[in-house]
Image (cartoon, rainbow, N blue to C red; front, side, top):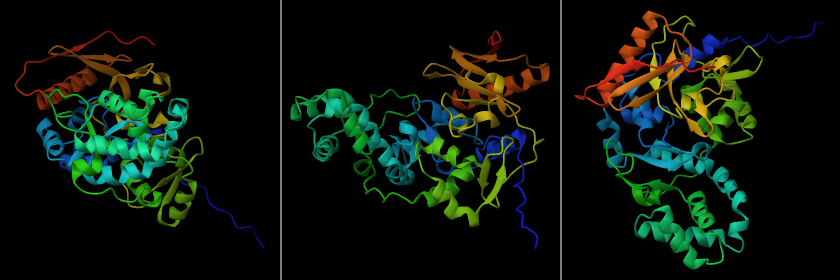
Length: 369
């Protein structure tokens, strides 16, 4: 009797993973999707600041103009809310009402850091009081602190407001988040703003295929990094018969959808300007598929992330606006041809987001290692 053996899963090297991920992220070629369909496909856009979702879509969609996303926000078809990794994301209304319940337990775990400030506070009653407050009229965090402190004068005001944000699905109401519009952060519940109740928390098995469609091929730890959830291994195992598996160069098992696109590693990848905190760079435990080893840590300083530049599909520099000038700061020398491609992409981005305005593109001093 011979022992049965299982052949190792096919290998996907770094370039293969890079091209597959760029394709899922709509960054290998611009997509004809609508803004709403793109936000849905990408499972939301990082929105720590108001402008990044617009830059994210300008890099990904054909003919994108800021009005396409602003209109969704104004019509309440998309909202800004704290979800994945306890950060603000722009989600479609449907995803807001399903993904927030998915990560609700993680949001509530954050309150362990505020136990001292919440001593003696009944969190169920706090949630009910806060809901009444923000549904009567949108409130800023300062207003929430003041109103909740009247109910719990011995508690820490900041902890009370954070507890309201963690226990309730609070969305930022417009004009906050509209392109070119100033607006303070005022909050109400997602259900009140959207006029319908939240959905029950979905099973992880229903979200895993969507994650893989946008970020795969990926490991269990990758999805846990993206979502901020833990213990997803069992959900992946239940889906294993419906998925295909690969391995990366370190031997980590990667899951994927059988019919998902995995382009040739030599597929050209045009330059792309991405906003700070773009999910492309934040949604895998190992960012090596996008970030070369020599550039690890170069896209941020402390808690502040830089706007990033992709060249040949990989992180290659940072950029910043300086008045009417787009300043590009590569991490290494670019060939003349690469510089021309980067400048052309920069001009296209500026024309899409700031039409009719004069602009210039300048290459700054190479950022030192």
